[in-house]
Image (cartoon, rainbow, N blue to C red):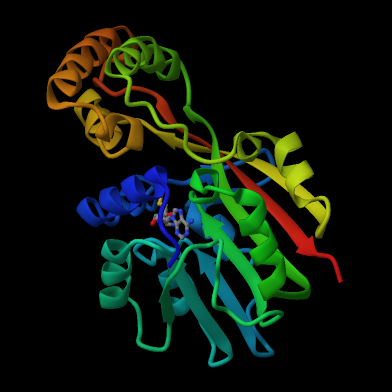
Length: 278
Ligand SMILES: C[S@@+](CC[C@H](N)C(=O)[O-])C[C@H]1O[C@@H](n2cnc3c(N)ncnc32)[C@H](O)[C@@H]1O
């Protein structure tokens, strides 16, 4: 593997310490858009893979602990071949322990895949492409491994938390991040907008579709805080800054708590689909 950037080194370290954090945050929550309601954001991607009547190869790019591959392998017929790629050994170890032996797992960067050109029918990716360095090279690799007319679908972040909590969090987090001066910018800003994705995919893909998904969640304040400690910006804070942030955040949340103590929030994400040009 090529030498990692500082962002990639941090991501590897995080996923070694916290494998399965994304699955813990998303797998149990429904994802809804104006046109559909999915059992989860992973299920939104799995729904994109047809029940195979002919042999079909699916690649999960940055597969993490393999949750999406598990959803696919649970429903597979004999003709579904599954491949997962991730650069973090901690996540791949969990995936290997959970997934059936026929699922191929590769420790690789998305920018330099060993997968054969034109060998994949469907590339999927859940909550990872907005983190990646050199996204143009990643998209070139996605197109290279896909067969002509092959399908590409990815779920990425669009903003962060849903509802009023979002502003409250930013209000307390941004000053602390500034004081610490350790703020990384993850990924390419174009992966955060529809215009950006349209630009990135225009050369090699057609039939682009965008579906904004809300992953609704009604946590108690401590449940929300626990989940936030497994997000990258907060994970990177020093222990004293985390303590300060927690105090200020939990205090500010009291205005939003409903009679049962919960808060209406969730994750704002986007599903993007496209087809490889022939
Ligand atoms: C937020 S996690 C998502 C994991 C999984 N897709 C899920 O949703 O459960 C991001 C994953 O992307 C992987 N990753 C980030 N950049 C990568 C790259 N350039 N190549 C391969 N994997 C990468 C990380 O190792 C991590 O497992």
